[in-house]
Image (cartoon, rainbow, N blue to C red; front, side, top):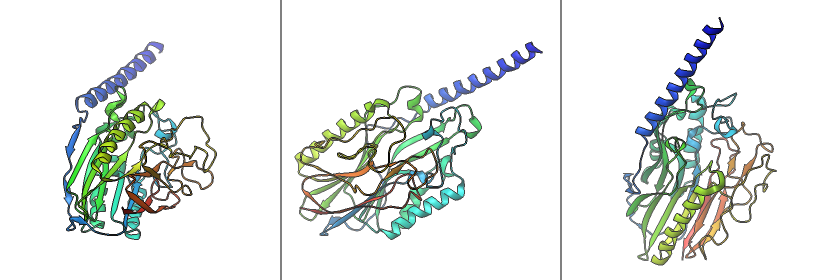
Length: 360
């Protein structure tokens, strides 16, 4: 009896190790390797070639791939690498449909000139292969749209001990929609990567840049960013921020207007982890330096949190919240207004931030 139990246990172990080997082999062989620089296709177009308004408006929002609204939690944010426990690997389809509908409603409620979305899924198991990018295009007729892929994996195997629950295929990225037609749209890869084998299942961080002609023969450069998360020690963030800083110095030299917006996965200057509610864990989050780019302005709404913990479903006043979504603008731009949109995290684990500005 003991020998039979040992044989069965050994067989189970060998099968599991074989599964892990095949997952790692497949992931390594088919690991997505984006180019350092790529021209982005414009999937829809605008008839407006020259910017000629007095005040412009913009929205940034990490839409959480349509799967992280307030009724959802996430196994990975609670350390569930091996098993999901009682947490969700993916939200039920009706939740996803509700969250995506909420994003569409936001677009209709807040008509702005530029929408910068992060974590917009095109074809991912976690969001039931709903093409959210296409849905945003349909909600924005007459807008120019481009998409920068930053997460392309054939099979994300976690939770590793529950392969029947695996996160699965992921195709997601940065969606940028504008009322104006950019004369240039490019994607630049950000430096740094996790160690193998983690890197084959992680995002390939990038920045999507759209450039527009203004009526004074200058250029507005709009940066859609999503800086690394789950970055112990912040080494990847430091590399990516240094790379971004050099890009912005070049923009400054060229005399361009620049707006950088998105999910920084860092706090702005002057905001700490306990700004809204006492932080329940002992971990470090960095602040963007006050003088990250000399003379530029970091712009945020200090009264509205933009990100919540997904270790549990959202509960106002109990769930941990922080502010990590904001703007960085060049000194030749005048800020008219910045406004966080408090949705009580109904549709994503992030909340939108609106910006109204003038070109000097």
